[in-house]
Structure formats: structure tokens, C-alpha cells
Image (cartoon, rainbow, N blue to C red):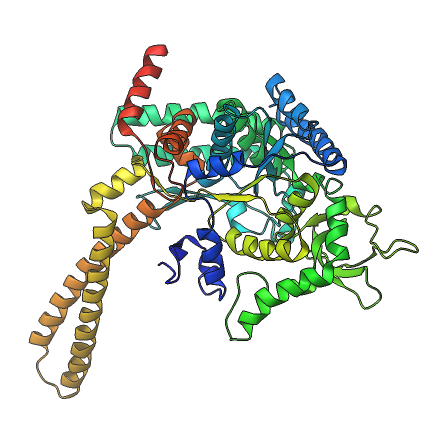
Length: 560
């Protein structure tokens, strides 16, 4: 579905945003983004920066936190140290992407890193100033969010069309922050691997293909186990795995940092937003409440304008959403989402009209809308790479706030296009339906219409059978007709089930395991990078080169 006033495909948004009344604003924002890699390069080359001392000091603090992450993840190399050193240079440009530490995260998260790295290497060929790519791990979200705990693989042998790997969490711990959740047990890790091997065996078309896929999994699982051995939390397990793929396998110099550790870096920005809280909330009130007055729902919370731009962490491992108290301008209160403890903090500095966060800065973290604002205020980033889904709604709000408060807005990039490739499960789906996705969708609509017609005919015959039975009339002819109709309906429904499963598989944006098993991570990165350099369209489908894959497999076999 496309918005009538734009070229933005609203089907790329999560369902909860499809009724968002400012969908036009989201679409307009999406259409203002660079559409090609070349356009992004041109825009990022056109401006030169030289950050002030307070921003430079924040970047130096950031370098220390990033070094800590990479030491713990075992991905700190000499080239990474060189990138960390660039944060001491006021002329360095900072490109940023962010995401939660999802279980075996889906391909789009890794494509952010590929886009920024390809931009970096392309620009550095023509410009003398340095560029640092930063990946911020959003590790203060609640573990209750299903996409953080679930990884999806296409599976034609599962009734739902999906194999879902899940990280189980005690219901009493659902409101804990991801950074405070222990890593999976060894038994869970073993069971995940066993499930994936069973999936490979069920989905493979030959013994040789099965052996190749298991070999790919074994190579990938070495990285999984390495990340696991270094991690103490669930968040770190997933974040370390991302770092090992991006830094170790791909050789990128992307710097990782945990958002939960960066509050002191953003202290000035937090103070600025709180000092301008009235203006901040007024913008949110307009963006959220104006649509509500028309009786329509919104993507963000309908009361988001009543909240402070940060969370307050609780000793229990959860956090509280803060609202301004009636006790004073800089007094905030909130109830912990887990233990329900009432938390109150007074940010007012003695004898000053400015808030003082120094005593509590280690216990706060930003809400989603505030993240890009803080990155701009305190780190003066040049580029922000976002996802295509619900993040666009929050970015639309954040950009409106930045304009009102005079905060510089970075170039925003989105590479949310789908990947077109045939893995083992996709191949099974295609063989089952013998048609392409558009044809399958059309056939599904036709079958559902036919099924409805049969449903109506059967209902009428059932009513007629009841009348005949009451009249003690013969039922043989009507029973025969009813039997034939039900048999035909069963056949139609079986075809519907197969088609629905196949289209779900072919439309799925699977977790990174699907790429690792079918192609290996090195080949996957090369295909994404090849698309950027040869095609360059950030909205076009990325078609994996099957011939290239075959050649790569031959090269790998000969090198072994």
C-alpha cells in the first residue's frame, strides 16, 4: 500500500503505524531521504565540520566506553585503536546507527553497518578528514519485547511457515532491562543449534546440499560460541555476536558502545532537553494530540508529551517512565515498571534555573525520541542510519523537535529494501506452489473468494438438510451433494494453507542465520556491498548473484 500523497510504501511500517494519522508526515519524511548511494555520498562530502571542545570531550569519553566494549567482546585490534584515536580529532565526522541487541538479529540491522562502511571507504578516497562509524547498542529496552527474544527462519515443514528460536524469560522478569538479563544457559544454546540442524535436514534437497549447509552453520556457530564465552548478559551475547560478524569476519572498523553506559556523554544534552521541556512537550503534544482530536490512534504513546525525555533506572533491574511532578519545575516522579516502587528525583541545582543531573546521571537513559537529539547535541553526528519500520515515526517527531529547539539535524539514511535470494526453505516454497509471489497472491485471493462461495453453498444445504430431516424426506441426494462440496472445499483449503505458508516464507525478512547457513557471512556482505556500488538504489530489492555464489563456493573449496 502506498500513501496517495507520496511514493512511500506504508506496508514497510509495522501494523500499529498503519493507522497513524500523521502517516503523511512520515511518508514526506521518508521521501526526503536520499534515494541512492551516490546521493548520500554527495551530501556527506559537501559539508565540513570542526567540533567545539565540549563535543570533543564527549567523543573522548565515548572512545573510552567503546574501547571497554571491544576489550570485553575480544574485537579490539590495532585498526580499531586507530578509529578510537580519530575521536580525538575535532575534524572527524561521526556516522551512527543504532539497534536493540536482538537474538540473531535480522539482515536489515547488519545492512546498516554495510551502508555506513561503504560510505566511509568511498568518501575517504576523495576527502582527507577522517570518519568514524559508530553502532550504539540500545540495551536499556525491556526484555518483554518479543522481537528481542525471537529469531525467525523460513520453514516449509512448520505449520506456520516459520521456525522460531526463542529465549525464554521468567514472567516476573519481563520488565527487566536487556542489559540486566543473564545470558542464555548452555542448554538453550545447544537446543538452538539442534533446532537449526533439524531445520537444515528437513529443508535440504540433497545430501551434498545438507553437508554444505551444516558446514556453513558450524563455521558460524564458532563465532556464536566465542561471543557466548565472553558475554555475561543476554544483551552482551547478542551485541558481541554483532561485533564479531562486523569487526572480525568483515574486518570493519565500526565502533560499538552500550547506550546504558553513555549517560555521562549525554549529560549536557539531557540538561538542555529538560531545560526546554515545555517546548519539547509542546511539539509532541501537537504531533500526537492533534490527530487524536480526530478520533484516530497514533504510533507513539498518546501521552508521550507528558513524559520526560529519559527513563530512570531502578535498583530492581527495571526502570520508570518519568513525569513532571507538581512539587517543582525539575522534580520528576515515576513508578518502576517491574517492582512498582515510586521514584522521585529533584534535578534542580541549588540557586539555579538549570537542572543538575550530576547525582543521577548514571541512572538515566534516553527515550526513543530523544536518542537522535542527544547524538546531535553531544556528539555532533553527521549521519544517522535508521530502519524503515516504526523508527521513522519516532524520527519524524524528533526532527520536528529539533527544528523547534534549533538542534542541528544529521543527514538521515534508510536502507530498508528487501533481499531477493533463494535459500533452502525459499526453494521448497517455490517448488510447492510453482509460481512467483505476485501470482501466488492473486491465486490466494481467488481461492479465498471460491472458499467463501462454497461456505455459502454448504450453509444453505445444511439448512435444507435440516428441513428435509424434519419432514422425514429422503436425504441421499442432498448428502451426496454436500459431501462433494465439502471435499472440494477441503481441497481448496489445503491449497490455501500451502500458498499462505509459501508467501509468508517468500516475504519473510529472516534472521541472520538464514544468510549464514545458505551463503556464509562473507558472501552476504559482498552482495550487499555490490548492490550499493553497482546499483546504488536504496529502495530497490537487493538481488543476490547466484552465479557469483557458485563461483565463491568453488573458490572456497579449492582454497581448502
